[in-house]
Image (cartoon, rainbow, N blue to C red; front, side, top):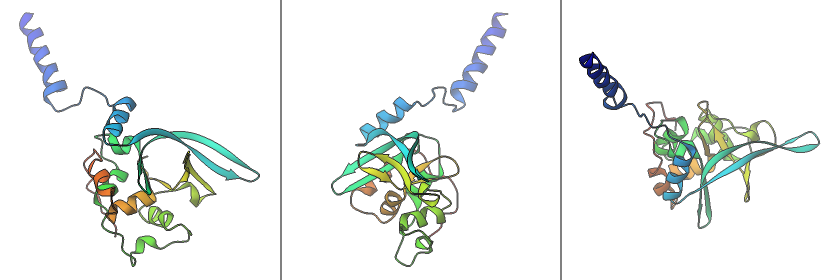
Length: 184
């Protein structure tokens, strides 16, 4: 019986520790700590939008926000700090420069970042109605992808175009990129 217990213990240890499985779940507190150590501020932003006749406040989501001199960068907290690959993390790291002739700018929105978001397969509250995720600075142009990952459209563009301070933030996005086609 002792041999069976030893064998079972060894087998269990292999599958939980030796197989590369992370037995420790990542938590919001872990994400917030990583965000803060990277120079960001972990904060909730509430979806706000205009319906016929009144403003509605929707659900709140957590973001890692960076307040740079003359700039604001907003990335979903989990998108920024998780080891789990996501679409927004992939575009944050691998999107090529968006030059003036890029097809990503094309679209019906008067906000070019909304067009880039849509052309990358994301969605923005502004496509449906007036609004967006908001904090004390006002509404942001958060682009949400099908896997739930999020990043501000302008933040994504400025990371791709290497605006001052943005490369440092992009290099700290924790997850490895997905192996997906990156439009340009």
